Length: 123
Image (tube, rainbow, N blue to C red; front, side, top):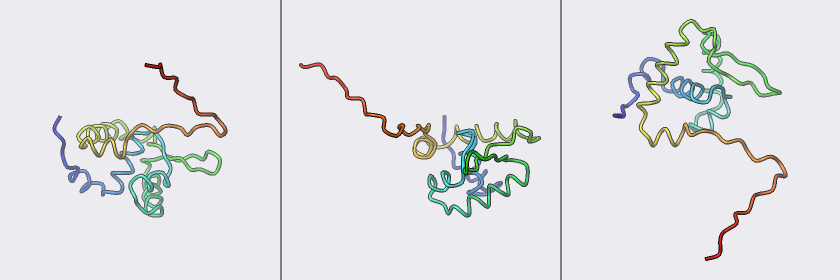
């Protein structure tokens, strides 16, 4: 598959909004600090854009403890079209961008959990 520059979608939505939507689409839900850290953006900028997207009905937030998680609003009228656009844009991202910013997240190790040692066969 040929990779393309995402200038066309940046022009429609803006670079920050595109990054936010791609990240939320890829991981199903996220919070502003995580996105800001991933893309080296200011947290306030990300929060502002996510609130604008929520006010427009594109994102929906919920609290888990003190953390405000955002996801694409399942009741958004153009949800299927938006998901299709984001999935297509994601597929056309260069491989190095996909691996740098959109790798599957792994949960941190449980506090106090011991590391497993690897048994090697003597040769």
